[in-house]
Image 1 (spheres, helix red, strand yellow):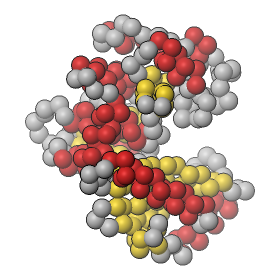
Image 2 (cartoon, helix red, strand yellow):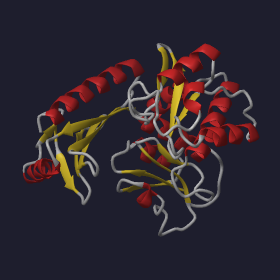
Image 3 (tube, one colour):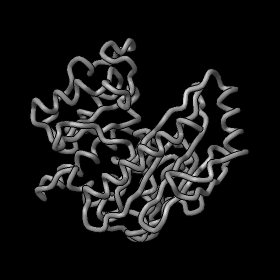
Image 4 (cartoon, one colour):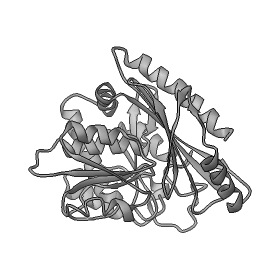
Amino acid sequence: MHGVGGAVAVETLRRAGFADVHTVASQFAPDPDFPTVAFPNPEEPGATDALLALAASVGADVAIALDPDADRCAVGIPAATGWRMLSGDETGWLLGDYILSQPQDGTRIVASTVVSSRMLAAIAADYGAVHVETLTGFKWLARADAERPGTLVYAYEEAIGHCVDPAAVRDKDGISATVLVCDLVTVLKRQDRSVPDKLDELARRYGVHEVAAVPRRVADAGEAQALMTRLRDTPPDRLAGFPATVTDITDALICTGGDGDTSVRVVVRPSGTEPKLKCYLEVRCAVAVDLAAARQRAGQLRAVLVAAVGSW
């Protein structure tokens, strides 16, 4: 996206055996003015419109957007209603499952941050691996195996940062993540399956997980801190109708609730760069029989959480 990673990504894909690569000409060359986007972040609405249009026109299997310094990787897929971008969590589930599905002896650790989805923990448990939850940022994720050095096999944060080969690059890296995403899509295609098929499989196995990031904008950093203090002093006692349990950690306030089939979670933390609170929401609904019904229920609960955090 007008950054430094385009040529390296294309050449790396070629060396990995992916020769049929199309690039968005208007966004491929480095340009510090980022003329085609309001803000050069693949997560921003509209930033990947040109990419998805190209993917649809050439009948691509997958679309990849790198941020300007190529350390983050966003993924677009063809779905029933047209092309869409995956969330960082969805990509994290897919890559975590794919990496853990490869046989390997010994202890394996996967890691995600406190504001990321909890599905990776369930995936890890299923494979007999260890999941470590860290504070936000790769300075913490990269140390997730500090007590068992060399055992980290994957780490991600919801903001489209992925470390897929810690032995080679112990940091978020969009280039290596791109190659692994393309490898996964190729494997699925050989099985006559798609990324949505794989996401459905994960939902049936671990429950439907609906996630959202909701900013609570304020006038200045002082107001953000005042809101955090008020939440710590008088936290919510219910969350989407469930009794709430509140955990106060250094970096955030974590509110959870639920029963055996449903869980809800809100993590609130102040932004380090802007005058706002960041609220990370997650709903998990177990799938008894009907996946569509579970998705509908999870979506309804997510809407309830979005409305709730707006009034905190």
